[in-house]
Image (cartoon, rainbow, N blue to C red):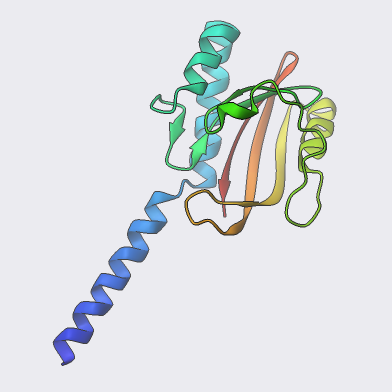
Length: 149
């Protein structure tokens, strides 16, 4: 009986580690954003948006992805949800009613880079979780990548 419990404990711990590895970290999100900014500056908008929108490309990794907005919160590129491309989401609220896209755009107008925290449903866990996004303004667009905490 003791062996059964030890076996179950090992399985539970292994599953927890595997789930944790399935989530991107804030450091990985920052690194992906830096690579996306470099790629955008080197390759321009059309090639960059095609790369960012590719779900099997180098700018989508687990729950990490790049999205790009203009300074009015119109989504120009989105690595996880192509249905958002072309939509203006300035009035989008998180589960607490926070206008997080408005905050992101306002911050990007004031400074070339920064962070925004909000709560959003994690597509992997299906639960509302805290998320931190990092942004970098390049010209008149904002590149964004974030991670669930």
